[in-house]
Length: 106
Image (tube, rainbow, N blue to C red; front, side, top):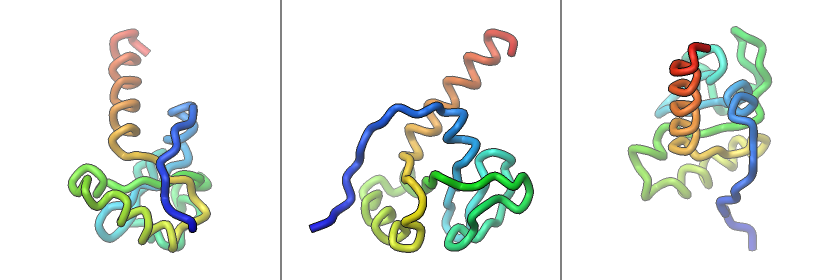
């Protein structure tokens, strides 16, 4: 029987961010160029920056943590071509990187 299981793996956060599709309630956004209003059900690459999407996450993970697996299960049937990333992990890690870059003057 197949089921959804969270798996940890090492990734370069910049690489994930470059190829990440962020799903909201009705539409998606490109994490790389911040293009809004993408149809997350069908979009394969960003129409603005031409980034090919390899990863997907949902903002609803934060606001509805109890529904996290139901969200992945439902949307995973639509976008089984993308690797799921935990939104809270993504926001924490990108926030740390931005703070580090700011403090180091980069």
